[in-house]
Length: 570
Ligand code: SAH
Image (cartoon, rainbow, N blue to C red; front, top):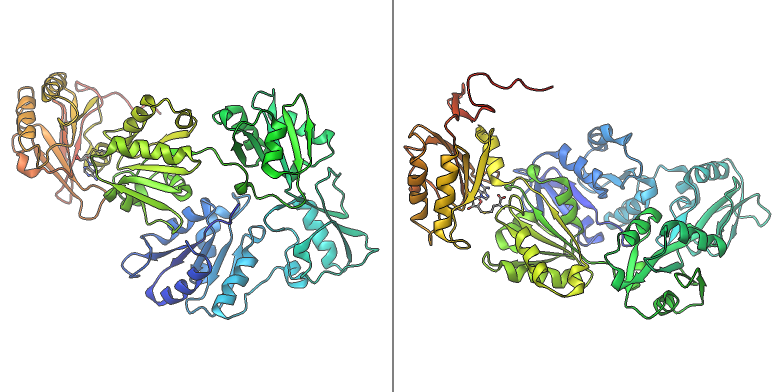
């Protein structure tokens, strides 16, 4: 698997040149610049602390161009909680110092050397083993796995105390290291895929050169894979990937097994047997175990799983929330980071970005929703990780239903095999309501006033009944150039059941630059005060307004009718 792309975080324009130099070492890395201080960054952030902690939590390697102390203080509250951590480095603004801070096992020293080389300075490496031996023995390269970290730490401290070591097996990355080698040493680095008992005097490193091809129908799949490997005297740590037939792509058992074994899951075309599947994939001698249900293939060199078969494609329909980055749920941020393709209405795709150079944006017009949904499935069916963006929540007058409709219409098995997930967002009605107080604090009704996809008579009927039922009302798509008269008519219908004093909240571009929030009444509301970027909330008969000291007001709908409010349950 490729190394994750780091984020370069800067606080002022003075560090932009250094940041650009570092960016050349990591193509695709984005420069995050503090709003109002940095001009020309790839991504703008407002709060340094929250940004850094977000990146850290998402395992994104961090290169912060500021004092090491600031970085330490910012991440300090999270350090104890985190098991495996991403590399974190502080780099002096002017590029004169590169200080690896965290993530020794994630390759921070390797990064420090790469960055230092690009800036033509020396990295401030402080890891004793690394300094003495020129490599971190506990951080083998891509394609190899360390047996046991705790035993490993002991092993390195014995070495630092003056012991010598032997190298057994092929460890090409150690050829350049300055290790105290001695053929008679008590300590040994042992590289191999054979199952082996851990011992204090051995640093076990497993090449990931074993492919396990399986059928999804095996009972207790992870257990069966372990047993088969044990029988073949092969270490579980050497599994590079699990391979299955693409007709079994949607099998939860396969997904869970790969998750439990912590290995990638790949798929290939059905060729009759798992043995053939494995042979086709790597063309090596293949051992078959179990009733033709598990095949084990061992390659000479570590395997690159990304070159074997293809992954199950993924399609996530995500909600960005109203616009502000703080209101985007973390699962959506993570999904955007893993996406290969991003589809959506151009405004929303831009709002979700910027994206790395390796990510493909497919911007379309707002009206081409079904075509967009089908395109998303076509891409995901090829094994890509695809994101379809909506503003607010994807299930509220947005892409989630269009995507499911496209799937429902399709008989293509490869579409039905896609790993489909809908990730929620803060919908405009809720974002607007929160800013105004709690106008939707009791039962409410959400309606789109657009008659593009439903007859106007139905809208009238629903409005009438909802208003009659004394529900608070939230209007999406209240008006547009092609639908100029509908809002006026809708308000007339509501007025049949509500007094002119009924509070109304107008939220425009909520969570976006230039947002406005206005509290008015049904009697004063005119369609001219509303446009297609506005959310209209109409209160029920009990909705009230409180004046705030700053002259603005809070709007809320009590949780009950009558004078006696329901006591808050603890
Ligand atoms: N899926 C979106 C709604 C899409 S329909 C959501 O859950 O929010 C588009 C309508 O939503 C717009 O016409 C407007 O009425 C409302 N809307 C979307 N974003 C908004 C925002 N930031 N502020 C106010 N209204 C918004």
